[in-house]
Image (cartoon, rainbow, N blue to C red):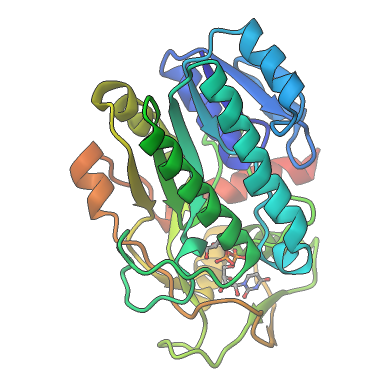
Amino acid sequence: MILVTGGAGYIGSHTNKALNKAGYETIVLDNLSKGHEDFVKWGEFVNSDFGNYDELKKLFSSYDIEGVLHFAAFSSVAESVDHPAMYLKNNYKNTLTLLKVMREFNVSNFILSSTAAVYGNPEFTPITENHPLKPINPYGQSKLLVEKALEREKNKGDFNYVSLRYFNAAGADFDLEIGESHNPETHLIPLILDAAIGKRENISIFGIDYDTEDGTCIRDYIHVNDLADAHIKSYEYLINNNESNIFNLGNGQGFSVKNVIDQCRDITKMEIPVKNAPRREGDPAVLIADFNKINKTLGWEPKYDLNDIIESAWNWHKKINSD
Ligand code: UFG
């Protein structure tokens, strides 16, 4: 069985669904601090903390776990700036506990949800995996510490990992069984859709004076199902190759905040009022992935574009706001 920590969360639940559809058996471990129990529609569910040593030992004794996909983490850059110790504890120290239990039970396959935030301010774009690692916030720092811990585990032997550095995850399950639902929401696309549906008055554009064509930040948006597919390919790679690797996961294309708002207007047919706001601390001007490495190594490529991302996010948004 595959243990999916954080499988009640956004990316974890989509990957859990994809794993089950691909024939894998899963157990979701989630303490529901951010996740939603009704997102766990596939596999088994255990409501517990991935940093609790005794609970983990019980779990690993009760199930035949062959690998771990580790999504459980705090993931808000702004929150990490306000609560750095909390990010260090949950994202890094608790992961060390998970790794310790994995070693005790001889479980040797691990996939990490990492982030483009490990790179910090890009020195060049598109960003390749060998770009310098200089995170500029505690969130990115906590994930980089985990990557270093994984490398140490690998060097001890009998352990392999894949670290997937996500760019901007967005979109929803096309069957609308699950989707993006953060509280509070901080991400651009769901906030724009809140403005489209009238749940908020407008969308703030954080900075119109960046050194980009239209002055707003450029990001690389990737559909959550493309992320899920990359996890399955990474798991197969771990099982078949007995080696570790690190991959960027993005679409390789950049869209400005204004581009995204315009495309949301086209798709929703809503007006979507905007408000210019100051820059948000810690936002690099441009983040675009070079995904050649995962393409060449695993044959992965994104199937969905920004239109698919916004359309699926909009359908999900309408569904959760009509209930
Ligand atoms: N933005 C706005 N208005 C908003 C919200 C966002 O203009 O109300 C802008 C941001 O300034 C940024 C872009 O929209 O330029 C995207 O912002 P998000 O908050 O949606 O995403 P981030 O790029 O900040 O963060 C994402 C992930 C992080 C990860 C980071 C990597 O959510 O987990 O990419 O840099 F760390």
